[in-house]
Length: 183
Image (cartoon, rainbow, N blue to C red; front, side):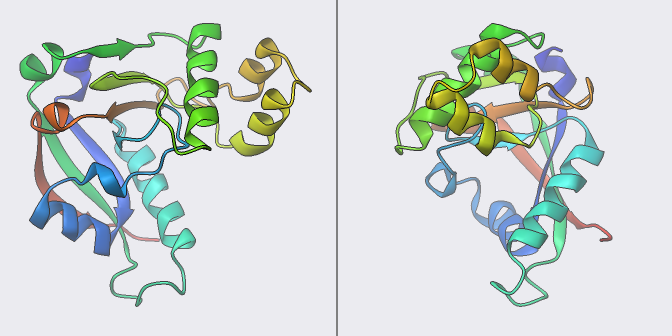
């Protein structure tokens, strides 16, 4: 997995947020803290993964926003890879203890609205979505690091993510458009 694999990438969300991004840009203040690589803006180079994220966001926001604003969408981007690679980045080329420990620390710090690292961007595999129960057990010491790793193993090796954590990094990404998807 290389940055060049992210020349074109995708972000799954709902129409309300996708249109905001298209019209106003990405706002890191709207990002959540307790995520795999910490507070940031996440994209994938796998369009099907972005569509899955959009459907999850749609379900999460059911009855919160009007139906028209809550439609699942994929936001399309291009990245200036040369510019981004000149910034401070972190790469995880494989699923291993370094990757799972990084996720554990990012999520643990994020639960307290803190940031674990100061990278401009992070690239690596997407952890399996059954995170919160495993995270609590790891924090409480009921499972060890190897068991945490085993529990968050990705379902697919094609599911990767790139996260942007600084305004400098966001200057490397350009929105190409927003497209509604079927759900």
